[in-house]
Length: 123
Image (cartoon, rainbow, N blue to C red; front, side):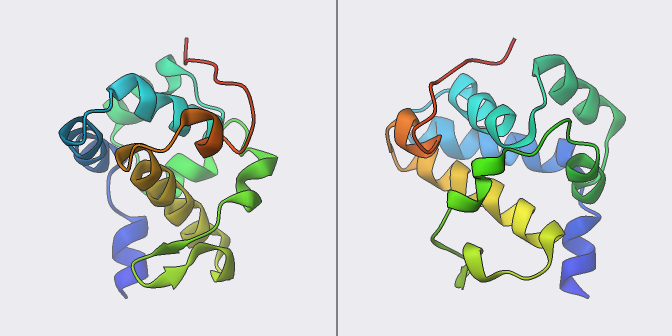
């Protein structure tokens, strides 16, 4: 039941929480957007459209232009669960994003967060 509630949460509601978290730790919204676009393939216009439309997290990831094939390199614990062990692909994508946001907020280098790929800022 809790999973279904999470899937139904609006990305527009979650995004400002991510922004507040990274800014509180001295990182920028641009850093946040970089990891979101790296993971999902959205560009800035796509993120803005998803926020404006109020899509839920399930739809946000279902409509993602291109999930990064290196997302499987994201490992670690979120909410007491190892992200690499999550069996539901929908939940795993949400937790991948949570893990990336934590890494940004934790001050990790962007090249490391992006699993060695070059940093390109969202257009």
